[in-house]
Length: 65
Image (cartoon, rainbow, N blue to C red; front, side):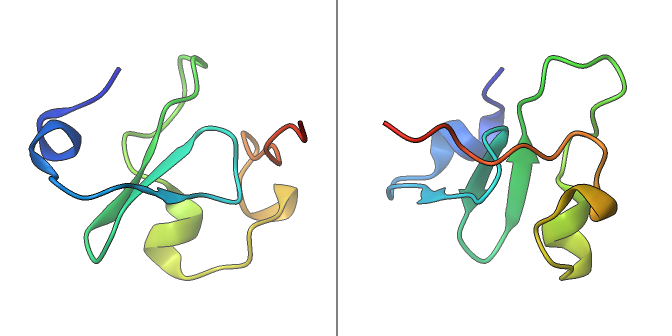
């Protein structure tokens, strides 16, 4: 589900290294995982960690075309 910040953002989103992420530049990366335990904002982006499974149980690389 897209939230208000994402709807009001008038620029393109930056692709996230996680298939669930939607980065609003200089604001947050919103997690769109359908898992019931998913946080609203990405814990990896918020903490400045590396994008890997060890930093978030829900992390999944985007599918390659």
